[in-house]
Amino acid sequence: MLEKHHDNGITTPSKSAQKVDGFDLSFSNLVRFHLFEKGDTLFEEGKRGSEAFVIKSGKVRVENKASGVLGTLGPGEMLGEMAIISDMDRVATATAEQETMCVALSRRAMQHMMDTVDMETRAIIEFLVDYIAYELDGDITDEDRIEADQKKRILKILIESPDTKTKLALQEPFFRLLCNSLFERARISLA
Image (tube, rainbow, N blue to C red; front, side):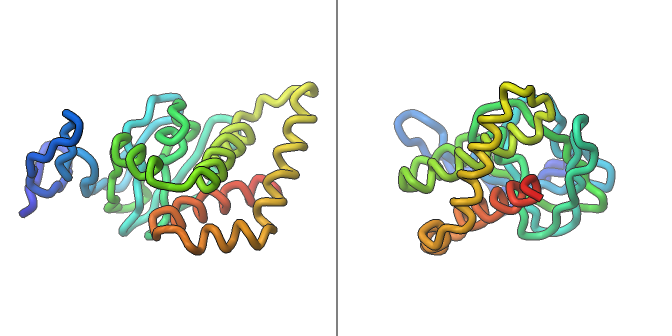
């Protein structure tokens, strides 16, 4: 059964009381559908993130102060996950370019999913998040150039490695989506 919250456009499944280790893990506290109107802000640069989004329909423009427009995302693409995975402030602002429906994944849902992935895949995901955030910072000093060069070389090895490709292909669909999304953003910064 679905409930419509008219004041904020959120449609969520009805709650089922489920507790694990004292935490409320009802479905609606972990995952929900969210409908954004054209011009609505999904999240703002510099703010703390509480959800990641998978776009089901519509388009979302992503931009930040340092680089301007970073791109437009559409159905099947994920955004907002970096702030959740690394517990950092948002590195960009996301705005709906048209009516957009997303699956919103709470911080707890993302943490639960990250806890289920093997250590190597988790290390790849965390490296990609850190790399992208580092590149988007736009405030790299000469002293940071050596570290930046090393990170780019690591990224190229990860991207080209048949082992990485095989590992990602064997992951659950969510982690394939997450990793592919992060790899695509990291590739853009290499160009």
